[in-house]
Amino acid sequence: MNKKYSGSCLCGQVKFEMVGEFESFFLCHCKFCQKDTGSAHGANLFSAGGHLNWISGVAKVQTFILPSTRHTKSFCQECGSALPNLQMDGKLVVVPAGSLDTEVTIKPNAHIFCASRANWDEGLESVKKFETFPS
Image (cartoon, rainbow, N blue to C red; front, side, top):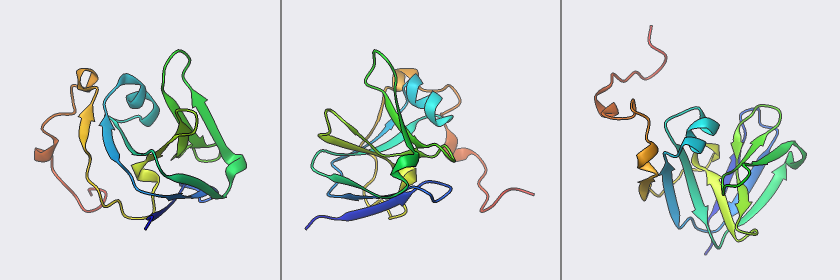
């Protein structure tokens, strides 16, 4: 039985489903992922057997391919949220974990491209935690 995952962008104009299973979940620390997320790493799920279906807003989806690399990013033209894309001639569905509205049941398999890891991305378990914005 294929699992169905649903997701959307921040403004809600783009909605999608991914039908299938995720084989991999990587936290990528390459400089490209740092730039396009504005964070320490990208968090992407990969499915070689899955099918990506756009439910609404497909005209708002923009895809950027960084020349001379394998780096691809799709995003909502309205709000800038990261969205899924197809890679390897459509054989691989790549889904940003944060774009899913459905709970992700697998844990990351690995941190990758750690040679590029941000120097401030260590020992974060000891940083203070708040349930909401601190007052």
